[in-house]
Every structure is written in C-alpha cells, then in structure tokens.
Amino acid sequence: MEPSGSATIDSSSNHTLNSTGGGGGCPWEVSDKARLCRFLCYGSEGDIYTAREEGRVSMESAGGLLSLLQEGRGPEVVEEIKRFTQDGRAVRLGPSFFALALCSQHSELKTRQAAFKALKEVCRDPAHLFSFIQYKKELKEGMKCGIWGRALRKAVSDWYNEQDALSLAAAVTKCKQREGWSHQDLLRLSHTKPANEAIALISKYVTKGWKEVQVAYADKENSEEVVKVLSYLEVVEKVKHSCDETEVINLIEEHKLEREQLLTDHLKSKQVWRSLLKEMPLQSVLKILGKMTSNKILEPGGSDTQAVCDRIQSETALKKAKIHPLSILLASENYKRGQGYQGKTKWEPDSSILKAMDSAFYKSFMNVEPVGKRFVVAVDVSTSLSSVVPGTSISTAVAAAAITMIFARSEVDTQVLAYSEGALVPCTLSADMTLAQATVELVKIPGGNTDCSLPIIWATENGKAVDVFIVLTNNPLWSFTASPVESLQKHRQKSGASSKLVMCGLTSTGHTIADTEDRGLLSICGFDLGALSVMRSIAQDLI
Image (cartoon, rainbow, N blue to C red; front, top):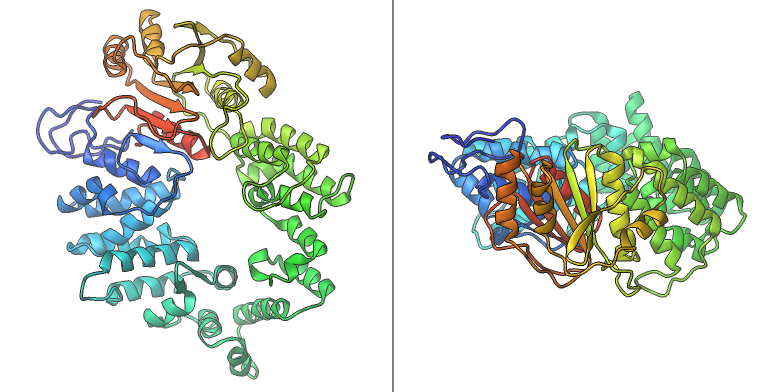
C-alpha cells in the first residue's frame, strides 16, 4: 500500500491511504478511517479487543468518527456503516447504530440524508430500530430540540411501510418493545401514514389493539394480502388467550410461531417446548440444550433427543445456519459442564448429544471461508486445569488447539509453531487430526515466557514471507528479545509483505503489545467467536 496525497479509499482495503490529506503519510498510521473501522467492528478505537465486553458506546470512543464528520466525509462514513452491518464484519452492532444516529443529526445536510436513507439497510429488525432511536435520544439530551423532526418521522414511516406485510406482522408480535421504546411509540411519534391496507391493518393492531381490528375489518371486502395478515394476527391472539396445551401446540406447528409470541405459562409445558424445538433456529437450540436436558424435555434414548441430534449434525442444517466450529465447541463444552453460569440449573449431559456435537464440530469447518493470506500461528499454552478462557468452559489448551485447527484447515499457507524453552519449533497439525490430538500435539512441548517477537524473527531468518502472525498464550509473563514493532517493520522491509501481528492472551483481562501507532498490531484479551472475526478483519485489511 503506497501513501497518497489525497484522502482516497484503497479498493482492496478499508483505509484511507493518507487520511490527513498531507503528503507522504505513513501507510501504517492509525488514520481516522482506521479508527472508525475499529469502532464499527468492536466498539473501540484502540488496538485492544476484549472478548464478551458489551458496554454502551459513547462520544469518548468515537474520535475518528467525529473527525471524519468534521471533514465533511459523512456520506463515506454511512457507506462504511452499511458495509460493516451487511457483510457481517461488525462483532457488535451497537457501535453501528450509534454511528448512524450521530450521522443522522449532523449539521451537514448530505450526511443526514445519507444516514436516514440507510436506516432500513442498517436496522434490519425492530430491536435494531429501537436501539437506533434510543441512541438518538441519548445524543439529544441536554438540547432544547426534540429528536422527532420531519426527516426522522419520514425515515421511521418508510421503515414500516417498505416491509413485507406478513414479515412485519411477525416482527411486531415477536419483538414488541426494547430499550424503553415500543412500536406504538414509534408509529405515533412518526405520524406514520400506512402505504397500503395491509400495513394499515398492522398499524391499527399495534396502536389500537385486536378488538378494534376485528370491528374495523369484520364486514369489509379485504384483499388477499390483508386476509393473510388478519389470519396471522388472529392466530397470535388465539395462542395468547389459550390455556389448551393441544391447541397451543397445533398453532405453533401449523403457523411456525416462536417462543417470543407465547405466554410464560405456555413455556412450562414440555410438549410446547418439543414443538418449538422443531423449527427453532439451530444457533438458539445450541444455547438451550442444557435447559432442555435439565427439564427432561430431551431424555436419553427419546425420539425428540434423536431428532435434535440429527439436526445438530446435519450438514444441510449447519450450512443453512452458517454455524462456526467455535460456536459448536463453546456450546459443547458448556453442555458438558452440566451446569449453567447463572441460576441453579443443572443437568446430566446426554452422551448422544455430546457425540452429535462432536460430529458437528468437524462438519462445520465447511462454513469457514478462507482469507487467502499467509499465516504463522505460534502457541504457548500450559495444561493447567485452572487455566480456563474467562466466561467459557473451555481450557486454554483446547481453545488454542481449536483456533489453530481453524487456520490450519481453512488456510492453505499456515505454519504452526510451538514455544520451547526460549525458542520456537515447528508443530505439525494434519487436517485429519481430532481436536484432542491437536491439543496433545500443542502442549507436549514445555513452554516458557511468551516472546511475541520470536515468530517474526523466525520467519525473517528463514526467509518466509508472512501476512499475519498470531500468538496464542495463557502465559501472563511476556518477555521481548527485541521490540515486536521493530521486528515487524524489519520483516515487512525484508519480505515485502504487509505483515501484521495479533497477540491473543487467552486468560488476559487487559494488555497491549506495545504503545504504538502501527495499525498492523492488535491485542486480544480472552477469547470468543468475535475474536476470530476480528482476526479475519485485520488479515483482510478491513480494520
């Protein structure tokens, strides 16, 4: 990547080559665009990603975003927000909603117009819309004017009016309110004028209730679409007032109702849960396996248990749900634990479910899309039983083995190294290895202090050009034989590669590699599925 004298976007990456607009900028500087991309990805402009951190974002963490807006680059920012939300790059969606809310009330007209135009593309379901509105409210606090100007009223009205009517009926009955906002609030405050009869029906249902809908549409000659929406809402109302278990089950199975549309009392029934499980998204099924086993809904040798096992390990189901191997592993280890993290829920893990999840783990590697870069993964983990990735049931050794397997299986050019008494030795992980075998292979060599400059020095000395160095460790003591930043710069110069370094402290709660303004360096504290996404994004030059 070469510096440019103007603020343009490199078509192969997501950064301005010289965001300051001056001549001769450094291609590795942390530009405003780079800070924006980090913010949209994981909610922080810094070079540290912390797993499972879900705090509210604020102005203090959006300096790059504010700078770009001041430079008149608001429409460019909105396009970036759309890319991060639509392409699955955002690990957390909150920062994107915050950024869009900020753009929507910027002083520049073209920025506001771009933001409101993008509302439906960024906020794809009611929960997203409610979050966006709440951020607008928070950003307006202390100001005399309200948030409900003409532009917002039109954007919210369009959000409802441009939906497929049946999909909207399902959406408003599944997610009725969030963050202090309801559909009734939004329709009233936006002064929405329904675009057609079907949307008018849904609007009346939300604002006036089912009884008024019945009265208004009883003797009317309705269109086919209105009849379909009426029938759907009638089913939702019927299930809300039904105490008949058989009727509730029939309605769930016939109309594919979801648990959000049921009453709490309905969810006390095992048969109701068995009906819900049949059409429940696979990702949701994985999260409640412990609860279903604890409540004897899934019992050893039962037909429902077999049906769930068949679905978990179905290649078609795994592909459709785009389940990642790490999602399976996290769910499997949690289920194996036999106890929830909160509350008193306990269960005896079912061997057939564990076997199905083990099978699904290997099958789900088909969902990992290769990045097509040259990787070196250096691992230093102990076998200490007390060494567990925070917030999970996975030991750091197993986590490191799983991460290494993901790269080794999906990326053609991956070199795995293990730390050994102050040096690095090659470690062979074959594609047909099981997770257990890979774990043994990684931990059989006794490690020492983790020196994250060693993999870079090893590659430079051996003439191996590397795009991304990944260091995985549970060792709290790090030592540097040389500066990681200087080692990386030397490797770039000698190999000609745009090399980056990711340091992942599997048990860490906060660390950084070095105080640097080099955007090719990133620290990860702890581990979750989002961490893998962040690794992919830095490899692809997206953050």
